[in-house]
Length: 177
Image (cartoon, rainbow, N blue to C red; front, side):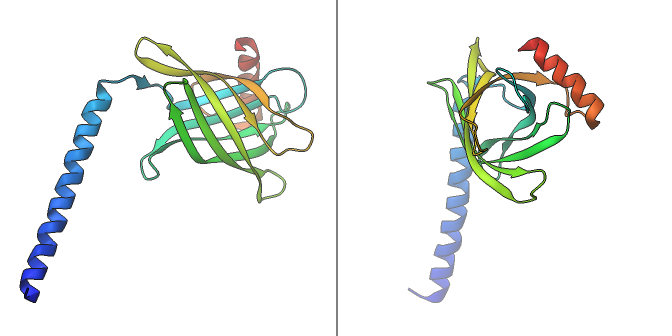
């Protein structure tokens, strides 16, 4: 086989691979449109069950096309509205059979400026018709003295700016929990 034939075969192979992948993605998207839908995207407030400090968190869920997964990133706050820690999703999975969104996150404490630990959480999804939506969740984090914690998951309009707006959202979350 000459060098020219090898180059032509390589170019034809690349074009065939790209077209084959595009066709696969098109079929995959068409099939997905016939299945149940996920209503995860948005800003969500969480209210931890029980009493204590740091009962509220605010995070956003979005689909990260580059990583091909749903990411849930956010901030946990002291009850007075000051940030305590920030989390960033590093891995996730939606299990439509179990009705759960599972995620693993890296956590950074506000006062330390570095990653504090890795945690695990899940969000229960409730099906309404053909659409799955978040309703409540739980997480396990590496904070000293803490165990698995349950919380509500409530959609809010946007991420609040400043402590006064956060405190209003916290009141809203408390009422809805």
